[in-house]
Length: 93
Image (tube, rainbow, N blue to C red; front, side, top):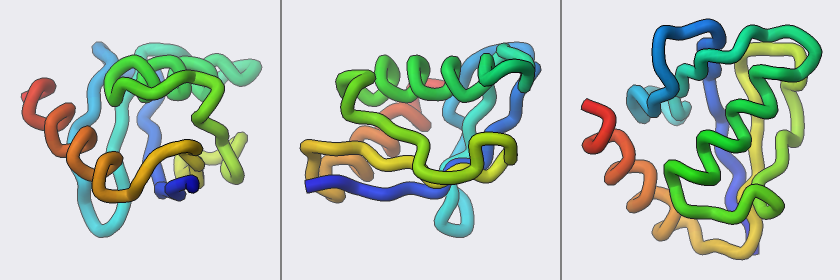
């Protein structure tokens, strides 16, 4: 089973953080610049570590060159993903 999420990425931020779940999108900031895929790589690494998923289970399905991305997380239930997102948002406040 896999879960698909819409992520709005803010690169070149002062810190890596999950900011909010807003209008069906996960708002995420990373310090990496949007150059040569660095921000995408940072997003995958940060989300996998922050949410407790294996990096290999997270894929960017669309939006490689856009701030709005569609990602997939494999081998997980939607309720589990949403719980982990809510916990992460609380940690980063």
